[in-house]
Amino acid sequence: MTIAIHESALIRHFNTRKEVLRAWEEKIGARFSPFRGFKMPDSRLYIEDSDFLDSIVDLIITNERHVFIRGPVGSGKSTLMLLALRDLPTLADRKGNKFITGYVGMTGLYEKQMASAIADSLRIKYRRSWESSQIIDAVAKESLRRYIEEQSRTALFIEDVADNQEAAFHKLRFLADLPTEEMIDVYAGALDEPIFTLVMSGTMIYWNAMLSFLPQIADRTEPLDVPPLNDAKAREFIGRRIAYAQGQIDSFDSENFSVYPFTEDAVKVINVAAKGNPRDIRMLARGCQQVAAENFRNSGNPGVTREIAELVSEAYATLLKEVQ
Ligand SMILES: Nc1ncnc2c1ncn2[C@@H]1O[C@H](COP(=O)(O)OP(=O)(O)OP(=O)(O)O)[C@@H](O)[C@H]1O
Ligand SMILES: [Mg+2]
Image (tube, rainbow, N blue to C red; front, top):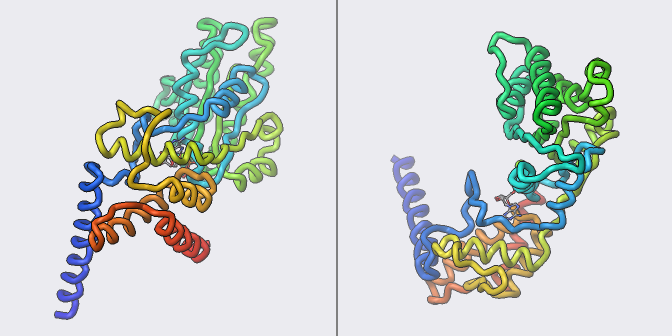
């Protein structure tokens, strides 16, 4: 009996909360919450940092080092990988080589899962019954063939690289070292540079783990720190999401847009608290929406003021401290 009462109270609470949020969204002409998390975010929501993106792509093209996109959780590592993946197939290196790209987004992989994921991502055929070393061997051979016959280097993107089994990790080392001595002997003269570039992502902790456990790769890898969003970019992040929820993203003008119902001050407060981390900006903006929606119900004003942003930022900081 008591349980039933609790349940209905809870359901009532959630329904009221939903209605309050919905009313605020309606008021600003949004069809859904501008700050909801999307599994596959629409690329029209991306804020591009072309300088940083160029530095990633330049490093790959120069072909001297592997790349490690380094940053805290939610800083935008995966987003940057997707942007680099978009650009790379349209480019060539200074020798005129084109690029074939693969992307491994899953983590927690065992050796064989990793080998299969790599082959799949590069569209290289193998048999299910093969051992992981046979699969990796097929990847190496096909990458070599693509380099020699199609003048194409291979760039393999691997997310959160240290989140896989250690044995899986060692498979990567073999690819990172291509061409092998044997290949160089066979193709005397034609193989005087690496043919396989790794573009990895991870946090500072994982980078340090790689330094100590896989120095052979780390020594030849350039870590690039994802820059935080500055205030102007944070403003665009919020502006784009609002326009998207209003169904107006296609006429979004990054030179001239409004962040209504957020005030300019509120956006700055949010970005200071988020330290330019896009995931945190989204979480804080969503918290602000909740408070502003309650306010809207009581006062009829949907605005996200500096006071609301400060309140939410403080609550968020406390929450993060408790989690850590
Ligand atoms: N440049 C950007 N423009 C717009 N949104 C961004 C940008 N970078 C990141 N985001 C958004 O911030 C969130 C986190 O980004 P992303 O998943 O790329 O970070 P990450 O560093 O890969 O995080 P994790 O460590 O959890 O894998 C996503 O909702 C993403 O859409
Ligand atoms: Mg990621």
